Image (spheres, rainbow, N blue to C red):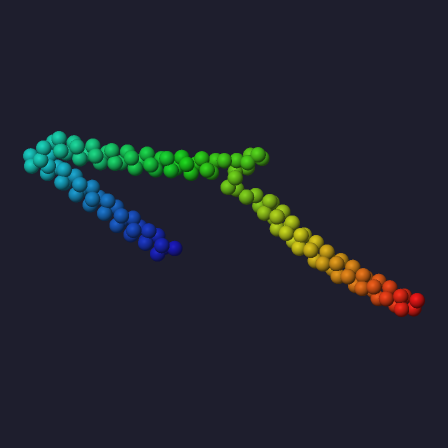
Amino acid sequence: MIDAKILELGVGVIAAVLIIREVLSFLGKHQYKRNGNGNGSEHAAVMKDHVDDMRGDVKSLRDKVDDLHEWHNKKDEDGVFNWYVRRSLEDAIKDLGEKISLQIQIQTKIVQHMERAEQRYRDKRTKADERN
């Protein structure tokens, strides 16, 4: 338990360090351009491109979340969410399957008894015909 927490903490620290390093690298490059070795309009254009990219990503993510919400928010005629299966319904279906299996067994036995009765009837008919 403690090992898992330490591992999670270690992974979090590594991710944070990598993110901070990338942000500082990005800011350092653009600070260099803005301080005279590049012009301010290039910096503004680069920043605008990054902001536009982020807006597109956020819009795409928002659309996906909205679609997921729409799927999970649908209900049936009874007002129950479609993705939710009631435990009672699951139990009823299992019970129905067991009863169908039992009915098949009973019907098979009935057919076997009827076949034997039919064979006895045929045997009696044959014996009766032989006597006549």
